[in-house]
Amino acid sequence: MVVVAVHGLVEELVMEAFFNQLGSTVLTRWKRENFSLAKFPVIARAALDERPPSEHVDLAAFTRAFLLKDEQPLQTQSGFGQPELVTYNHPRFYIQLLFWLDGTTDIHQHEFSGAFHVMTGSSIHAHFEFAHAQPVTAHFRVGDLRMKKIELLETGRTVPIISGQRCIHSLFHLDTPSITVVVRTQHDPGTGPQFNYLPPHLAIDPVFDDALTMRRKQLLDLLEQIQDPAYPKLVQEMIAELDFERGFFILQNCMGHLRDLGAWDVTLSAFQKKHGNLARGVAATLDEGVRRDAIKELRSTITEPEHRFFLALLMNVPKRSDLLAFVAQRFPQAPPVETVLRWAEELAELSDYGLAILDACFPQQWKIASEKQPGLFLTALGHFIKGGKKIPSPLRALSPAELKLLRSVFAASSLRVLVL
Image (cartoon, rainbow, N blue to C red):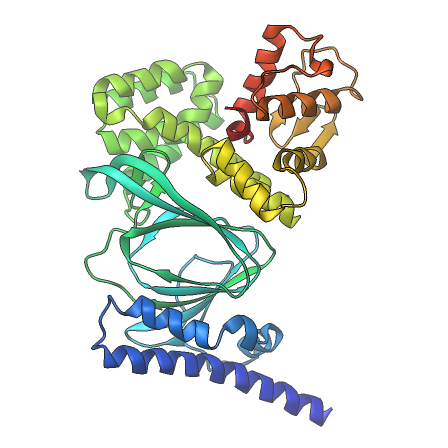
């Protein structure tokens, strides 16, 4: 028993020494560069690569030490990570462990710089640029968000973090848990706000607190819950009075209920008429937000890494050809269309409400035996993925209108990129 206790203590001390040494190495090298912010990402990345946490950190020993020892670095109040643990703290920078169970980061930039290292798990990493940016307020911008690159980050990979708009990215974590070690500055002056991006056309400051708008949304939620008949007219009156930024957040909050009431199109048109060209991308941004939220919700119930990989591509890849190329790169043992259709079949579920592949639901109005629906639905999906030219025999009994309906079902779902 004594030997076991001593062994556990040694492991804990080793873990503490590892992060202290990592912090000391970064501090010494950064000091030599006169604490240049431009040099910090290179220094942080090099230090992580020289002694990778993925090879040197015993997670069980670290967890035990963090839970049992009170002498820990000052912890932040951040809600980032599931959870975030600070392992080293200095007035100029700190080191954190970020655990991810079902988290998917928003598309964002940073007010800090440094590097992150994949200690456990893997992620899809998407890089973006925000072109034609036009400030509306200090906390709200319109523009065109474009994907520059998408890559797979596996255990052991280290990536630099550049503060400001040069590093706009998102992470979709594939494994449970995924753990990253981040070496980061406390704050890089002049690089804020730390915008989140709502594809394809908006950027917002998530830290900005507009208490009045928050309370108004809460009051509208109350009116929705009690089914107040004045709800749509009140929202339309608000849209006519509010500025662009606050009007957008009201639209975003009320979109679902207005659609249920059949009042969405007229409300959106009123907003677009009021704000003209500034509002040109709002409809697409709101629709894309609904799609991405649906995929995030699906992710919380799906644990198979291949299926999470599929969801990550559906969320982030803008074109079918790019998605298939990525699948072929990651799973070269089979043609990519076959792999995608295998995933779709594995994800298909038959319930009392009918057949669904993720959130694409087989048309309930069709009187087709339930045992025949999966084959027909998957054949149709494969047909659309391949370009929809030569119609396979199982679909030849369908009319052009019925084929169009099936395509629209997929186009309105998380599978949209595969059929458009």
